[in-house]
Amino acid sequence: GENVEQHPSTLSVQEGDSAVIKCTYSDSASNYFPWYKQELGKGPQLIIDIRSNVGEKKDQRIAVTLNKTAKHFSLHITETQPEDSAVYFCAASIKGNTPLVFGKGTRLSVIA
Amino acid sequence: ETGVTQSPTHLIKTRGQQVTLRCSSQSGHNTVSWYQQALGQGPQFIFQYYREEENGRGNFPPRFSGLQFPNYSSELNVNALELDDSALYLCASSVGINTGELFFGEGSRLTVL
Image (cartoon, rainbow over all chains, first blue to last red; front, side, top):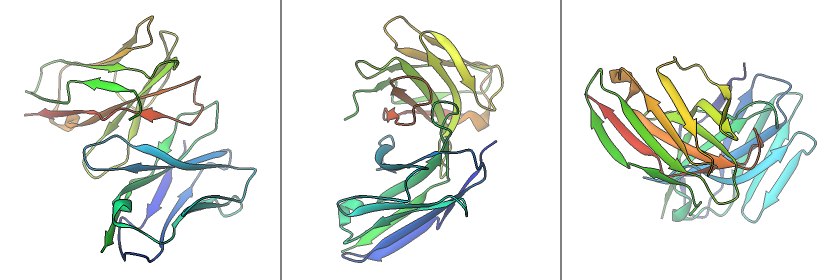
């Protein structure tokens, strides 16, 4: 089955700097890659996703890139703000076929 | 707010006991997935219910069971609790099977002593 590896496990950045979180997946059939943000005491919330027919997707300060050949995808957050501090999870699935498999998460701390 | 509500928010049980967790899905969503999130880990898929039938199950023993009701709400039952069952149990609703975009509740924190 699918296996998703996520790095780094923790990340500290200064406010205004960029943050990058990277994930690799094992199943070349996976075609859907969402990113979730989990704040303390809350459930994960979808922030952006990408399908395998797209190489990059951007939504304001957040962007995701996908390299199907290398089987890895990344989350980029620019101009970080203290409210970006949370745990971020990447996930992968075969859309319509398999459930989401999550990485272990990255704890992002944005220092004001 | 996702519109997915879970109860109870916290509970403490002892080894060998049984627990039932409840989830109300977002309006218009017909699919409920349950995930277990151990401390410091990502959510792990337990099973999914679509139109009251189990549709897919992760690597969890049969003592983890579930139900979905006609109004699409759902229950997760765990029998013969073990210490390792201590975790945050997340319910997520969606429209259709394995569509990817999940709307999570805030979870039920289970502690097994």
